Length: 275
Image (cartoon, rainbow, N blue to C red; front, side, top):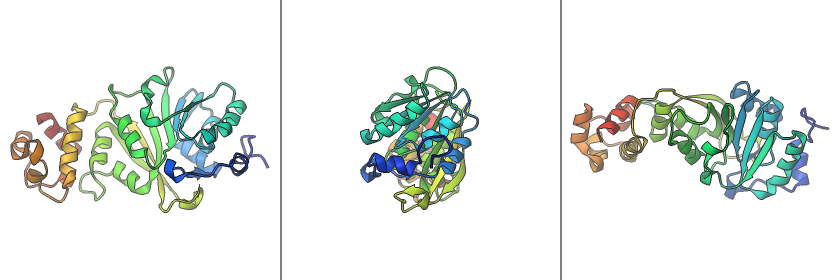
C-alpha cells in the first residue's frame, strides 16, 4: 500500500535499499509519516519556504516537508547508502529536492540558501546535533540566514536548550540559546517511533532568533560560560578565576559568592562584556 504522498511506505524503501541505521553515524530512522508531518508542521506554514535538513537518512521527514508544500528542501547527508532512496523522492518532486553529500559540520550553511525565507528542520544525528546547533547560534552575522529551527534531540539535550536560571539543566547551551533565540519544547517522541529504538526519549525543540539579542561578543560569552559551568558547584569567584576572577565579577557587579546556575543570560552577557 502506498503512503499518503504516493511514494512507497518507508519500511519498504529501507528494505529495498538494504538500509540499517548505523550507530557510528548517530542514525535512528523515523518510520511514522504522521509523526514526521507533525515535526514539519511545528515549523509553521512551509509554502514558499526553503528548508535545510541535516541527516535525512531514507527521507521520512524530507517527504513530510515536501508534501506540506515547501518550495525546496536542501538536504545534507553523509551516508552515501541513503542517496538512492533520496533520489526517488527527488524524482517524485521534480526540482524541489537538492541533496548534498557531505559532512554537515564542514558546510557553510549561509551560502546554501540564497533566495526566499529559510527554515531548518531536522532529526539531527545524535553525535553531531549539539555542535551543529551551536554553529547555527553563533554565525558571523546576526540576524542569521534562517527564520527558525525545528530540531529533534535526545530529551536531555532538549531540556538543556530551553533551561533558564535556577533549573538543574541550565548550562552553557541554555545561556547561548536564551541569548540569541526564543526556544520552546514542542513535544516528546517515544523510542518505539524509531528504528532501531534509542534507549532514550527524544524531543522536538523549536527556536526562533531574537531580532536584537543583548550586544555581546559570542567568543567572550563562550569563554565565560565554559569557565563558570566547568565547575558549576563552586562559587563564581573560584570557577572564573582563570579569566579574571573576583576583579572581573566586581566590574560586572556580580556577587562572587553566587553560583553559575543562578545567573541570568543578561548577567552572563554583562560579565562577557567586561572581559
